[in-house]
Length: 287
Image 1 (cartoon, rainbow, N blue to C red):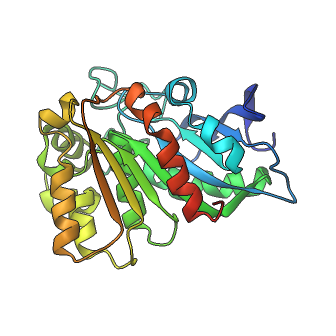
Image 2 (cartoon, rainbow, N blue to C red):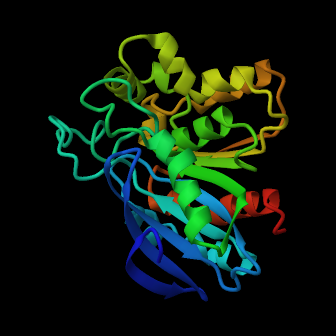
C-alpha cells in the first residue's frame, strides 16, 4: 500500500484489518497502526473513520484483539484506526524504565523537554502527519468525516485533541479517561517530564481546563467510568472534575455514565463498545 508497509491483512466481520507501519517525520521513528476497513468501503463509497487512542503500555494489538469494536463498526460501514501509544525504537535514556512514562506512555502531546522533544510529538503526528498520509494513500476512507475515542491515557488524548481542534472531529468518547491530568499523579509525572515545570503550560493539555473555554457548541461527548476501577478509586481519573467544568461553562452534550462494578480492563471496553461506536456513527451520519 503506497506510503505504508503492510505487515498483515486479516479478514474479520466481512471487513479487513490492515497492520501498517511507516517512518514518521514528526516522531522520527517507525510508527505502527492498525486500520479496519469495513465491508462495502471503496473509492466510490469511502467510509468515515473513528480514531481510537489506547491507554498506558498498550499497542494497537490490544484493542484489536480484545475490544472487538469492529464487530459493531462493520455493519454500520465505519472504519477504525488504532494508533500506537508512543514512538518506538528511539531508545532514549530511561525510556523503558517505567510503565507510566516513556515507551507506551506518550500522553499524546508534543514534548518540549529533552531528550523527548525530538521524538515524542504524537499530537502533531495524530492531527497532521498521519491524516494527510491516509487521505493521500487510502482512498477507501472519508477523511472529512472523523470522530475520536480513547481509553484511560487515550481517553485523555481523545478529549484533549477534540477540544484543541474544534471541528476536526465530529464527536468524542472515552472509557475511563484521565480527565484532569494536571492534578493527578499520573498526569503530573508525564507533564513534568514532557513539558517542564510550568503548570500553566500543563493546563493547555488538560481536558478539564480546556473545556472551560470551549467555543465549539455542543460537546457531543460520551464518557463511561467503572465504579470498581482502581485508577478511578485512587483519584487518577477525576471525571467529576470534568463534569463540573462542563456545567460551570454552561455547556451541553456531555453524557457521563458511571457503570456499577466495572473495572479498567478490556472487559469494560468491550462491554460498552457498541455504545461508543454508535455514538461516533451517529455523529458521522451513518445512523
